[in-house]
Image 1 (cartoon, one colour):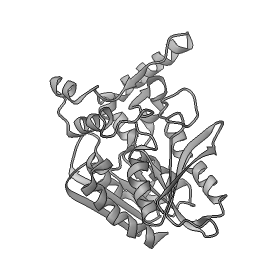
Image 2: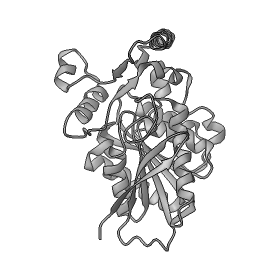
Image 3: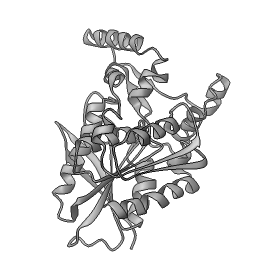
Image 4: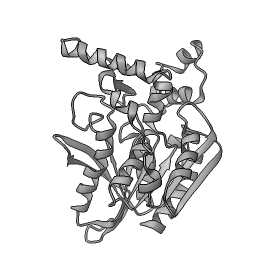
Length: 310
């Protein structure tokens, strides 16, 4: 038998969250299983790295895994679309946990999270709030709030917030929404226009080509709705509230999305008494999305970590 993928709809605030449950081979609904929630990066959907790489591999190791689309994105509900609001992104995790604890095949004391890139920042914040999450692994973890104050706003978040305010006023008066793509349309376009950062180039290769492209994926923000990120910090109060076991996996090739720097910061700040930092030599942020050697090393650490703590 092989892994079985079952789509489910999970009630949220006023809409449903779309998720795929990855059941291991020989799954027995009469038993209770440890479950790992896998959370997608900013700009991704559940079928991409969270699902087709990490959830699949975790199910192969005997865990139940569940990959979900963030509210306003993918197949999940919520309007306006492409909203990237940290309050909702963090809250989504607890709705997924609500679903899990109502299933007879879930061991409610063995629920963990593995999250990638921006999803990892939201996962850290969710883990601090929801004590039903017993262990967390971040892979190429980022902090979208920090990036919004830095490169995403050209290091001028006040000007960005002024522009967001103007856009909201314009939309209230009938103007169309402004949907901004965070990436150039192609690697060639990026290089021709002097964009040389490794994360930007590799993100473009991943999202804009057959390597990682998905029909529902969209590396876009609804501009009028991105202001909430400006004052948000995924790691706020980690020194007090992030006490669950923590595994941080990063590559040592730094780029604009700062997973190397932010991983080091999280390791230092987390209150977790049991925490691990794995720095992979010669590995970039996007290698940890889908490249077999890098993701294999991440999973080689994550699987025993979850077996120990779940």
